[in-house]
Image (cartoon, rainbow, N blue to C red):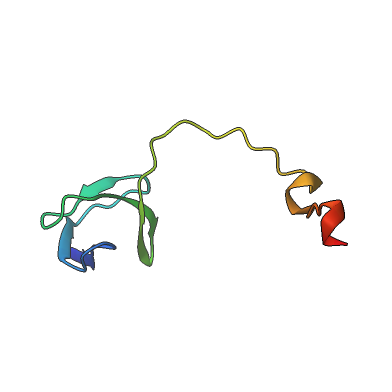
Length: 71
């Protein structure tokens, strides 16, 4: 039996013997749903089921604008 720990509360989670990437597990202590992202070594991550974000990561995000009174 494979055992890991919850990312939120550090409670022990028993995963069973057969693990697959993308498998979701629920912490019996706090109820958070985690996803297996690696089976060797075992790695968990939080599940995100929200819509895909449409973000423009162009150069405009880093520009700092100053007003004429700051000069």
